[in-house]
Structures are given as structure tokens and as C-alpha cells.
Image (cartoon, rainbow, N blue to C red; front, side, top):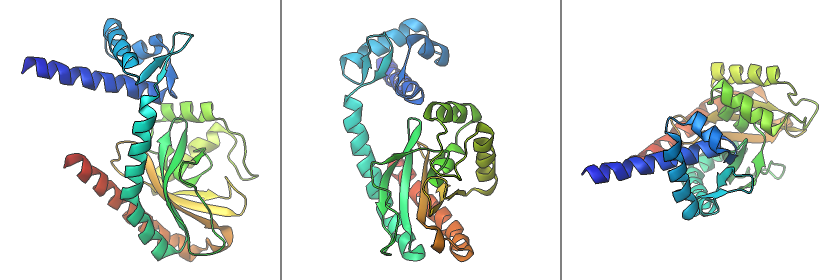
Length: 253
């Protein structure tokens, strides 16, 4: 029993290191890991050697550590499964609101779309699965940012940059944090032509998700009237709760 307990603890510690490297943007130094982890440096080094040996971490020429190629395949499979869970929920959103519905997940300093159901309208947005977008000027991105602590927000946004996509894009850290506080207060994030001219969006974070993620809708600004916005709030919250229940249920089963 003691040996098994030690094995489980080693697995937990190894995954904690992978999470730390992921939160650092996929690459970090041994000194960074030592500063962020409560583990003693010899334990960190031993676990890293094991992870490098099996391909889940790779050591770079500058002696830093990065996530390894074997994680890519696992991530692709996980995203496909997540997309399958979300698809019927997104389809219901489209039926109710007639706008493109998507699920996006935190991916480094950006969010990545892992599922989409398009609007039935000929004029519609296309949030292609696999597409990565910045967080500070998209509805799904802001919803995800609001789930993070301020230190992580600062790090992600600083590393991703605040290059304006449109004339309505937020271009300052104070503007980003003001938007985040608004999302935290209301529970709903919006994109008012900040990522693409002529396109608006709304999103709600998935509560209790193992990785920060959000359900959102987007469409032409001409169709984003007060009536749609009012209906979307409740619909998005219900959709986010449904995805959450499906994820938590699959983890507990």
C-alpha cells in the first residue's frame, strides 16, 4: 500500500510540473519551477528527467524545459472529446438564438476554439475549430480571463500583447482589467466589434471546468439587438451549466 501511495504521489507531482510549464506558456526554466513548486529541487529534477525520457517534456538547448510532443496527441484527443460533449449543447443554442455558437478553451496565452455549430443564416461568423484568438478582445477570451487571478491575467495579456485588431479594441492593461471586472460582476462577457469589425459576441464561462473555458455566440452587429442580447444571457448560462455537468459527470464516472 505504501509503495502504491508513493507512486500516486509521484504521478500527482509530475502532473503539477506539467501544469506549471503549461501556465508559463509551455516553456520555463528549472529555477522558475523551483520558485513556483513546493517540491525540493532534487525531486523536481528527478521528475523532469523521467518526463523527458518518456517524451512528455523536452529540454531545450538553453537548458529550459518545454512541453513535449507526446502531449500534442493527447491534447488533440481531449479537444475532440470535449467538442463531442459540447456539440449538442451548441446546437441547442443555435436553434434558440440563430447565431453561431462555440466553445473555447484556454491555450497558453490565448483561447482555442474546440467546437462550433454555425448559424443557419447565410451571413454568419466562422469560429473554425482549432483557431486560436487573443483573450482581451473576444467574448470567449474575456469570459476565460475573468476566471483567472489578476497575476495570471497580467502575465497572459502581457505575453500575448495588446495589438489592436479594430478601432474598438482595448489597448491598455487598465482597460483589460476594467473589462474583466465587468465580466466578474455580470457573469457575461461581450465583444463589441473589438476583434473583427461588424461582428459582436457574448460568452459565459463554464463553471467548475478543469481548464478555463467558455461558451459563446457571435454574429453580425446588425442582428445583435437588445432582444437577442436579453435572450442570450439566460441561454448561455444554461448552456455553460450543461457543459459543466457533462464534464463533471464524465470525470466522476
